[in-house]
Amino acid sequence: MSIADDLLRLTNEAQQEIAAAADLDSLERLRVKYLGKKGSLSLVLRGMGAVPPAERPAIGDAVNKAKTQVEELLATAQTKLAHAALEAELSAPKLDVTLPGRAHFRGRRHPVSRTLDEVVEIFARMGFRVASGPEIELDRYNFELLGMPEGHPARDMQDTFYVDVATLPGAPVGTVLRTHTSPVQIRTMLTQKPPVRIVCPGKVYRCDSDVTHTPMFHQIECLHVERGLTLAHLKGTLDAFVKAFFGDDIRTRLRPSYFPFVEPGCEVDISCVLCRGKGCRVCKQTGFIEVLGAGMVHPEVLRGVGYDPDEVTGYAFGAGLDRMAMLKYGLDDLRVLFENDVRLVSA
Image (cartoon, rainbow, N blue to C red):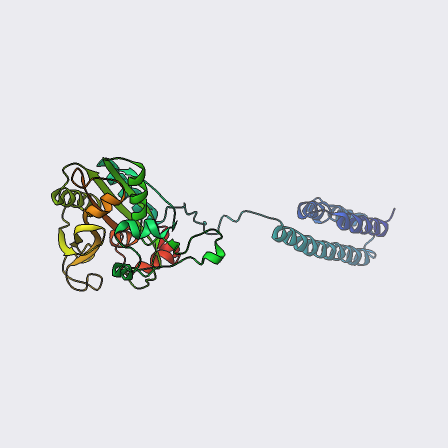
């Protein structure tokens, strides 16, 4: 067989094998097979010594053409396989270790829920148990048995959401969204004889909306009824609670005030936890901020639930949990607690 025949055979074999190559590694092996130092075309060139001198230029030119043809076939196949490999890499799911990591945030309880839990725990250590009641309340429990019969001017102190009885079959006229958790105190005293030591946390509703008020808010009330209780017991309980919740350096003061269900009644202020008593927008530059109302349970309230005010006395107070959370976490606007800002609720 002549060299020309060998070149033709090798070229045809190379074309077939290169076309059938499945990947770049296979293609590299074919390059070595045909173009390497010990490759098929190199072996052909080594046989040039047996070719007559007059025929060598023609044979050499044929070998170079065959080599060039194989190189072009390899280059074309390499481009095609490299493109296919890139497409496969881009389309297949793959972990890119150069990408920045994704942070995983653990869920947290809302600041108001955390405040409620902390307040309840403080009162539990002082011997109080938790009591609860309905949020849709009857006028009798929300107002009448708390010293506010129909037409009493004290009702004007609470802008109330009344329930449309047409949308709640069977509900009596005057059904309301409770304006405080005091009805829970009434319901408890109607079913339990003294001594009574309870705290009543829950949602309440009033038509208020500003920096320190929202239409729906959370409240916790405390009630303690038994023999021999005085205003000193009230003051001591309040002071112990405030110091346990806000810190030992917080000062407490009582200001006389009117509430129809206590006598005497008072407003309870604490030194502002935001400005530490120096004066700010929240405390209106006074250094103190009102946190709750309190007083000794009115004798008429005790009589209304079947207690004898000559035998037992009691004290009660109520605080807004949202306002306490606002002070606890250094917020200057109560409304941010209800805006679902993840920076706040996950802090």
